[in-house]
Image 1 (cartoon, rainbow, N blue to C red):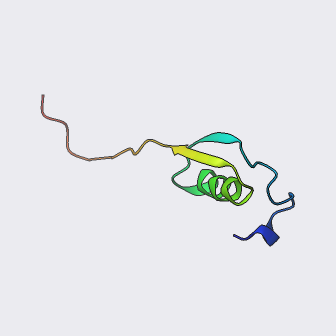
Image 2 (image 1 turned 90 degrees about the horizontal axis):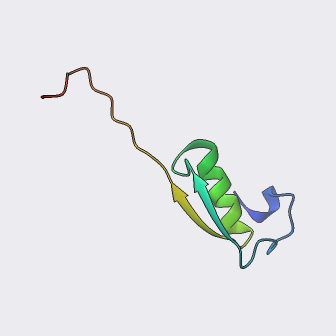
Length: 58
């Protein structure tokens, strides 16, 4: 992604802080990248879920 891909003015979010939930993958990651390109300070938060077919030991 580059600034040319965005419809917003470069520097629009300079000095702003943004928290993006789910920012590790998919739409959240793309949004984080766009926010950084626009000058924001972006922090991403996400949860990794591990699935297993084995039951947990009690």
